[in-house]
Length: 426
Ligand SMILES: Nc1ncnc2c1ncn2[C@@H]1O[C@H](COP(=O)(O)OP(=O)(O)OP(=O)(O)O)[C@@H](O)[C@H]1O
Image (tube, rainbow, N blue to C red):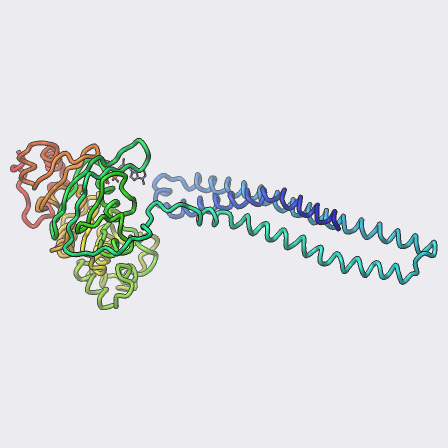
């Protein structure tokens, strides 16, 4: 019995590594499958179906090799256990038989021995099985435990209270931030958005515009300086309360694989169907939705692939309208939309942003010429700030960007109600 228990524990511990390896390969194979299915468009653009099949096949073969080792080691464990039981039974039986022949035991004693040994081995077998199952379950749960012990990047203070929203003034005071040590993205950035004002952030790609938005939404905590809303440091208030006042229209709107109605309702889960439709009207997408075969019940597909970029953006705007936030963060889409769609989107946005503190990340300068203040980010710092005309008059970075955009055909399409005359910039 001792031998049985010892061997069971040793072999079970030894085969743990195969089970762990098998789980890792299983995760790799599944993530490869999901990745290539989600990115099916890219796969098709580059004719890479064969490559993806081979990649998945490789992953599956590695998984199968690990599975083989796991099953083979399980078979070894079972056979060793059976061998020990068999040998024990054989040795005991031979001994009893010998004692019967020398008249030390009766035949009944031999039968009694057989009955005892069977009663002993049944619980031993159970012990082996349960020990192995518990061990495997712990290995399978390792990834989950790793996830549970993952440190949160943004934590609420123990004494954090709710944000007391009054008028919606936003202050960035000497904000410094980097995603990775040694590469500073924002350095001593300071600016103020007065209540109800619209402030636009412009600058070259990678200058940190979206990062400003992420910091205000508190996806990350700043590493230097502070961000205040109505005089309260946002790192000292509860994330939930902060986020309840802020609405974000992101650069790339990703929708859930559900119908349009539920996707819009995501802005406020408790909203009624009528409120959803009112938000869609305000976002100027209601009529478009009615032209779809199933109207509001139309399924949008994975990540909303059945909708166009402009439609997805208007669904995002409708969601934000439904949320009715007090501060609006707008990360403008980089892709140029056709003039009519863009005019519609700008008009919807103007409705959402009216009388709300708004921070806009703009890629097309024509969309922000009426902003109360424009901040030009360069190398993680605010290089210029002022209104459109003031910045043009300065003849600096902004003026150069404006001039460049005016020369490209896409930017000739001004989305503003009062188009800016290109000559002004010269
Ligand atoms: N999660 C992240 N981890 C590490 N670096 C990041 C992360 N997100 C962004 N960055 C880096 O931070 C820099 C600023 O990114 P950000 O998205 O703020 O730029 P942006 O000005 O909004 O650019 P774009 O106009 O192209 O959208 C970039 O160099 C980017 O590579």
